[in-house]
Length: 206
Image (tube, rainbow, N blue to C red):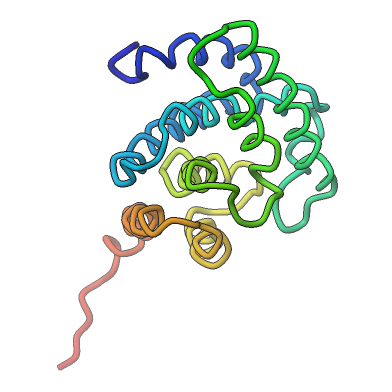
């Protein structure tokens, strides 16, 4: 396990995991964690002891909301957009309680401040906040993210990739995240159009 997680983050993951068994948040969180580590490699001036705990705990608040309504909480036609803010408030409360219980190295106030607004706050409080927000969004560009979003909204991979290009890329904060998103989108577009392209007949231009 410690080959994937930093040893100092293992107790935080174990504390977060029971809260993440909705909306594939456990899988989303692990992928975002590794994307966060990649961003930190490119921003050595950032404090990983803030960014990574915030990633592990950022979505624990969804557990407190009605599971049958969660699919209606996000997206362009969300019927319960207030859940976005509510999950941040609940997440900040749960994160503080878990971190205080663990009594680790973490600057709890800074981590909780990032969680409390990670989706609804425009802009970033700090570089650490920016990298946490970017890691969260970068998951959407992965194969897992594209498949999960497609299942949420009933969209095919082509439409999902187009949506990510149009609506999510502009919201990324760091240059590093934009470069990573471009690479992930290149792979996602290739996968989405692969079957069509391989089935194309040779055109006779003679």
